[in-house]
Length: 548
Ligand code: F6P
Image (cartoon, rainbow, N blue to C red; front, side, top):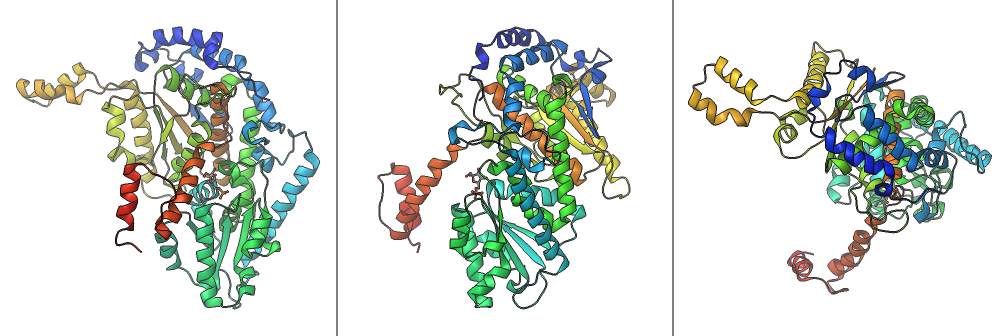
């Protein structure tokens, strides 16, 4: 089980507080007087280069964080996760998404033989199903080949597979993929416009098979299909389920043969490696899906075996804690200079914020320090023309991860060079900034009259001193993507251990779901179930007025 101590009660925390008071005064660019900084604070792991030298740290910072990790028993926590201990204590579950991608089967002990057998069986079933759909062996009720596959799911049953399908679009050579998540009827209606029931396959992706949004969309999809197919028996050829809840799937009317199982030890936001990844296998082929898993397996091995000083997720996690709890940063950004990764920040939002958005510690007491950060992000260079202004000159400290491929997947004139020059320029600008003297000199050189210069110069000063990480991978392959995702998963884990919180439950989503259920009947039946506050009451009345 995980250790239950407050990080703020450790010796290392005290030391870090004292160290922070010193280092916060040093501007980042002054830290670069040490010409060996890049060498000292960068890590190479296979084709990934992780440069964290542009952070407000020195060797002492890392040493102290290692002391903190030791006091918080990080090593034991990592072993507990990989070995299948029930570290998700509030749900009494193991956390074994890593077993789904463990081809070498190194780490799991408890009941591992059967567990691996089950995982392998589902993988084999996924392989043959996705092959059949892609090759045209699997045909629709009227004898036509499947041309479109719709994944209906939400949260982890959507964000992961959707992000991966977008990221690996370059390799997509299967049927067209669509993702429907929102209960807003606009989402499925607009998707239907592109589809023909005779050639469409629906994947109903839901761990619980009870999620309101997913089930509503699934029933709507079935009605839409039956309107043309007429015969209930044909559902078999057009609906498959990716779920842990066989009973509910059968109740819905999906054939048992078309159920792709996974297990309660796989959290929703960690489920793209399971049967939930079926849309990925259909889109890029099963072999490439396995490459994705193998990339993640390599990152798992790195996480388990690399020295903390050379361990990317450990360092990333520590830096996150450093800025959240010592510098008071509220937000962090992930900025991929890779258009294929345009859904990566959205995926990471659930991964990080649903995992570490907690305020009760593992011993049940309230935390008195900051946990989970707000994560935002958009692909570069687009973000530069939108919100970067606030990072450069606003009042917040916003640490940011910049990601970029060494080689492009599309060779087009000098696009990639321009993309990379922006990637490099932004991290440099955020670090060095531009001083008042430099601005004045610039204005003088451009012959701006002194009175005018005095008025504007402050607006042109850049404080700099903003920390960034740079992550470069050779090429966005399935293997590289698998590694990137898993590194971030482990970063989130490390932070949860240091923050002494449970990262694998999500009780915070329940209250809204419960109230929505009650309000739904009030909206539909026009009756009041519960006394509401006057705002909710007023809004409810307004929505009913003239509505159906
Ligand atoms: O509401 C949050 C959540 O439980 C997520 O954790 C999960 O990924 C999502 O809903 C979807 O759940 P399911 O796969 O069971 O439909």
